[in-house]
Image (tube, rainbow, N blue to C red):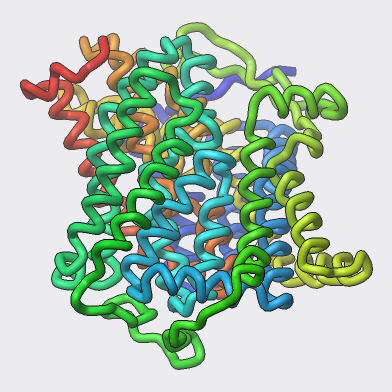
Length: 553
């Protein structure tokens, strides 16, 4: 028996919107204000979502339970699978001692924490976002930063802030490709439109990142390096997205930015070296911050050995991200399991879609093509390169699993919550509240993308969720559908830093367990402020000359 979604069950959008927001409010309040452990907070949010879906929206109990279960499966694969295996590689490198050599080599480029942050969190993170996405960049960069001596809050929060501007073109352009494919946008037109929105923020975010870390004065001390980093990322981002396509935007821009910054630092260094490992204005205990190490020289062989596991990781992640290779592996083994009692039994209806259509619920066990599998194989190859024997590799993997067990549980519960809100229609109620803002729609439509990513943890999922609604609303208001489709993705990237699964990935990578609320409180202002700036920029593109000249009709 099918069930049709209802987006205003009480005939009053204010009441319906307030009810729809309860699960998210419960989870965020538990994390951010009541300091409840992340897996318990996620469990409370899930219970609230079940209650709202069943009793307020009339969703059949069995369907609600199966939607949550389906979300839990997607939490394990691909997200949990990535987290487990990237932490495994990090553990191997730390125990082997090569991670310390890697840190020393990065310090050799510059001892200044601000410049290290630009190089690792922004440039290196953007490469991993472009190649893999789905939490990989935060896991890698937060782990490296904590090893360099950054405080846990700095390593976690700043990695999340840095992982914004590249997200729309992450995982080889998957969010943009999905937006075009699912909702009928022209791929090159919407890619070009996003490429005319995000480069401004690609230039802004490095400045914002250093200001958040060290303050305005310390930021101005290294403004030439920040400008080089931002410009060398923004220009390729614009050119590739507008004239080539969305697939390689982040990878090309990240490599250009990384090389440009390293070359620039060979001829320029700041007069004052910033060595503080903690965030300005945030006190941390001595146990949580490591003092800066004196510069250490290592042999070329040691340096190659230290960087080899991460070079191997980059190659594997890039290859695993190629659509052709994914298709090849899926052709070998990728069984699909339709969720009985849920698959194609929930109907989405207008105004979210033009005509009613069923929601698919098929779990694909694409274990071979999953990014986490590529990371696991790279970790095994790296472990052999680091001279671990098979017994040691297995023992370390078991220890890593035990180390991240609660983080995996949290991710499962978070995805269960997000999937249930999608199938029950409560997230659509929140989206419709934004859609009813008339002339202010360009601003609030952008925030619709922000809330979509904040709830689902994925720019791709947000584009699937709200891309069609953006198109319909834009046409009704006489706006460019490409403008608002792009705004959904561009605004969504700023929600990435507050989505629960990203915060859990960051806390796990830094092993700062049970501090997810601290991370959330730190990044929340940055998230809403940057999302609002994107909304204002999109509004100018909609109404204000000469910004209107950039709009792809």
